[in-house]
Image (tube, rainbow, N blue to C red):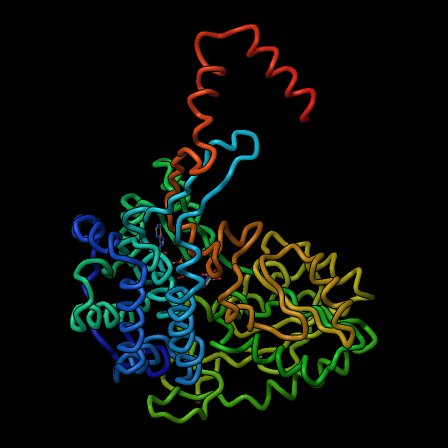
Length: 494
Ligand code: NAD
């Protein structure tokens, strides 16, 4: 493993394969029943304690910054803070309520009631990407753990060190053995996880996600896919342009653009487009790009490119945009004077058109195109003309109008007059539509999906005395009188 910002060797990590994954699942299956049988409050207490262990660890954030190349502030805000907040949410009242038994009372057969029980599914396999080594890796294990599952996490082969540190802390802080395990490895280890898990939670590319879904389908186990996006930012003429430009820069270039819900394309009403591009260019030029220091100083805005192929993808999209009449306003290519590692200048492309690759394919890097649109109608049409639908934002001085436009976007979640903050709204589900995935994280839904439902139908405590009578009337031997009663009831009641 090397540091993408400095090129320095960080560690040698042996790649686990199918055998290591199988062994982890065997251990997890042995450990899960005791964890699943604990009362909610005890699991919650343990996970909150562990979140504090992560918060107080001197090495965790350093490890994350070194292997990913993002600024320390981003590692703390996006990843560690989020991990603590998600733990708070799922181990609190919302989590307890979401997991407790539901009682349902049928109207017609009111002598009965149904108890809906939420059991853990067993061992959940979580497969993570490299752009968020904590947030899209351990943090995605919190909900399945709260629900009583054991988890085997397979982090990205490009950033396994953060997850390995989390696993070490799990072991050394007295958390229940084997309930959470990490197997570092490549795609074959990921495939082995998808072959063994009782449910798979996958975050990554559409190509790998499809394979994971096929493996899950063959075994009829549920799968959540959190894939890529092409999120549009719609800026209407009456928007606060300065604020929109500021947030466009942040949501486009945080994490060097390697953020799934980042602003991937901007659609601006023609009347204000030139002014907006000017403001955004000024914002981008003010960004400080450097090797992220491990020291506690937030003086870097943009760090390195974590994954080498992202450099070529950004260059290819810029060349394609130029060939189709686009204009590079600022940035435009790799930067060599910043550090020995991989750096790419935050790049703004004006005069973008819908057929450009940068407007159609996921960039997931530091390039941001701006396209002029006639009006809000055209903006909605262009935004929805995408095979993906993950996130987005709508900007207007009239928040109600922006919210009405937001509802028309084919996307999993969207911000009004803001960007990226949808990831921090852990109370609401966040996921993709169309090619951006299936299922979600966050919210009550994001916890309950890690449960297997069992419905137990029993006599109602007050009206159950009717059951023997109804049982005699409605079952063998069939009688004319019963048939008449059923026919009469259907006519009268429905
Ligand atoms: P990737 O698909 O290459 O790898 C993701 C993980 O899947 C890695 O751990 C990898 O080893 C594993 N993997 C690869 N092939 C596999 C297979 N056949 N079976 C099982 N596992 C396999 O993706 P990446 O490059 O690490 O991540 C970038 C992508 O992730 C981008 O498209 C980005 O938008 C997306 N992403 C989405 C979200 C979200 O929440 N929607 C969040 C972060 C990243």
